[in-house]
Image (cartoon, rainbow, N blue to C red):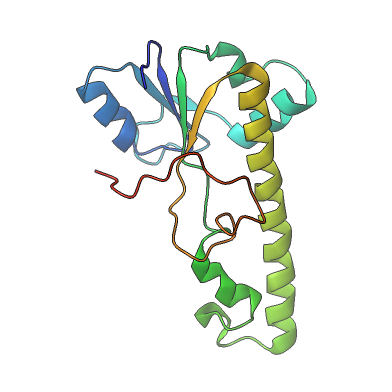
Length: 164
C-alpha cells in the first residue's frame, strides 16, 4: 500500500503507533478522548465525530482527511473479544460476588454498550466508503469472537497475524 498522505491513528493516545510511523518516514497524528500519556495530538471525542459525520450534522475530523491519507483505527474492542462470552453466559470472574439478578443487570448494560460500539463501528465503515477513505481497523482476532464469526460484521479483507 502506498501512503502519500498522513496516517491518522484513531483511539490511540499512547503515541506508540504514531511514533513508529514517524520513525519510518510517515507524517502521523493520533486522536483520542484522553491524553494520559501526553502524546495525543488531537484530544477529541471520536465517537461524537463519527455520529456527526454519519448524520450530516456538521464539521467533523473526517473533513480534514484526504483519500491519500490512511486511518488506522484502534477501535475499542473489549466488548467484542472472546473473553466477553463469560459476561454474557454470566460466568465472568467479575461476577463472582454478585447475585444472579445483579449479574443479569450488568449483562444487560454490557449488551447495550456492545450494541452501541457495534453501531459506531458500522458508521465508521460507512464514512470510509462514503468518503472513499482508506481505513484499517485494528482488532485483535482471538477466536471465537463477536466480530469474526461472519454473522456480526463484514469479513475482514486482510488478517495480519504477524503484528511486528
